[in-house]
Length: 553
Image 1 (cartoon, rainbow, N blue to C red):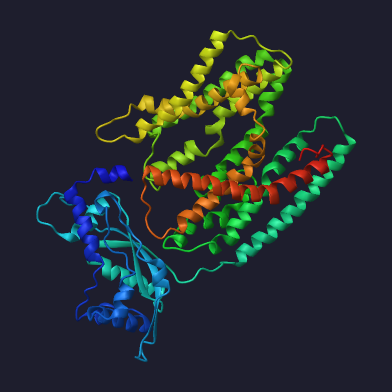
Image 2 (cartoon, rainbow, N blue to C red):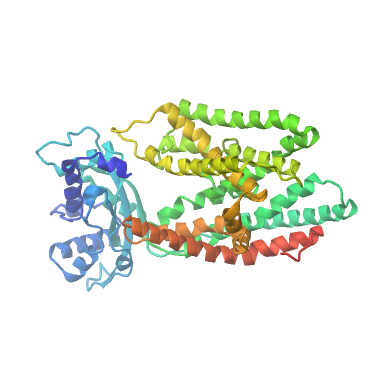
């Protein structure tokens, strides 16, 4: 977003600055009644009463208007979200002595708008504040302003008022959302989801019990179904809990100017596609509408686990002969896929606005699909095969070669992390070669995995030194056990943090570090609770049913 703003001249941004100032001055003339004649009776009376009192400088009207979003600092740098005062608006009450007016309660509404025209001359000396609309549209900028209206106004009334007020600035209102009181949307559909999930749990529990009874009669035999089921039960209980929690209680955990809008980006996906998330197939069934989209990793991991015998069995049966052929071919096929798709669709490493078509295509073809994520998995499988074949044998590596591999590993990690930076700076002064861009897209994930593979191999075989000592500290074991719960629950906390903000946040390096460490600590706290209450009990239960040793758990 900041890259788009830096392309605007100071003169062009000044138009936005002044227009936002003018937008927030209600100056309805003597035709106000005819302008708002389509409003409902009570809303119309109270809004006109408020407008007249504001023009007369009545204290209560000024107090209500004071909660509106107004022009603010750093508009020239893109600070165009004018939330106003959410809490004061919702708590505003004015008792009118006029019977037809009654009590005026404040209702907070957030209005998003964009320009109505496209062709302008941004450097025109003759300033026309109505050109804001065209300027905003030409830069694909959506502006937001918080307004406080009488609570008696319906959604239709609010839309009408917003369109009349903002049309004076040549702006088209794109959305209006109002919130007067948070509530739990417990619909029949949600009830049906709970019932279905209850039945699903019963079926799974019965199947698990039956399979474990069969396992007792076939102790010592390889049981692929049991292995798959164990993997499924490793993830699904905690995931099921978080999906139900997200669908049921997220709306009760906060409020704010963008709270409803934020949840509207998440909840419908879970209402409609919770099943694909729990079955770990979401990365192919509904990529554009993922429920808890950060759980794509579990879907990819489970799918790759299902197909792992395709590589494991031939490697076990024919050992190095098949390894030398199958693993390189599989690795190259996935890398070529990413490279070709990046070239064909001209995907940049930094795609652009989150809601752009390019971002949707990138998610659909490169970010979420399991086959686009298989490169690191292939490297991990290859490492596991090598370590299995060398079990009980310590490979001899020359110290100079070991040093070189350590330097190469850390260099590759550095290139993967810092190499991303130039792609984020792309503008008219810095162009990116398509081949370089596609190559980075194809190799950076696998490059990271390759570096980690060497670290694991070296530490396991006695070439890790102080790094192996540090990574082997027992203090890491509790964190490793809780990593799944922390990973699955951390984003819920972040969503609530963003949804409940009252004012835009200044993104200084210090503030970002403050937010980062706050997120880490809170994620650990929430993750520990989820692990102790959900993940660990189910893990112990599953281990007892399978007859495995549970002392360590």
